[in-house]
Image (tube, rainbow, N blue to C red):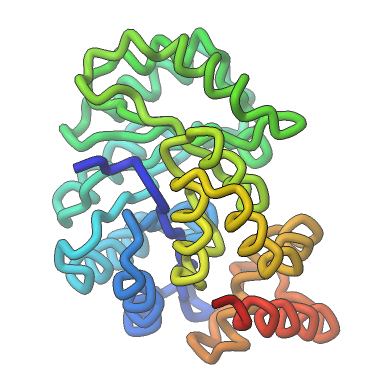
Length: 303
């Protein structure tokens, strides 16, 4: 199973005002994703609001999701936490619930050194035998993985992939070449998987040969996202460009407000949930919600 390959769809985690997971609404979102035929589900990623949820709330979300999906699509669970022992507990919780893989970001308050991040990942990776993806997200964690650190981590038996931010100037071919050069010593026969997040650049990443697209938009519009991913994976630059035009209004909103706020607004507009982001994050203002509705209308025209 190429767990960290293809389109990975990251849904929001609907909760009530007390943080309790709305399992039925989460499953409604997951139903769209499963039926679309994506390659994996990224549960409790940044879009899933993992940092705002307690351990018990995360357990509830994972249990509901794994039970509903029933093995039809692999489920990757985010287990990032401030403390190493807490992240280990979350990794074991995900394993015990039936998750297929893990996603780990170096969440911190005090800035972390490379050695601290290395030891953190070693400890969490050894907590289970599930394959683990490194989440390199400097925008939120304020930590950037060096090539040397990625090289060290790629040697660990269960660390199988990295989720990267978009490279500067969208220089994907050079970025992929550097990353593969530093991780090619992996002992895994099928190699170390390299994927990207930052939806507006990921089609270009797939065209350049990236293994995966970790997608915010795929969590809500999986059919359209899969069309874009497949065109890019096939190397069809013209078709990729044609399809991506329908996403441009959403991409602009993602860049302006962040994907989390936009997809919550979109899910509300589609009547899939009435959940809103966790405070202190505020919902979009009505005028901006109207812009989201317009972007959805454009995406609906994709055929």
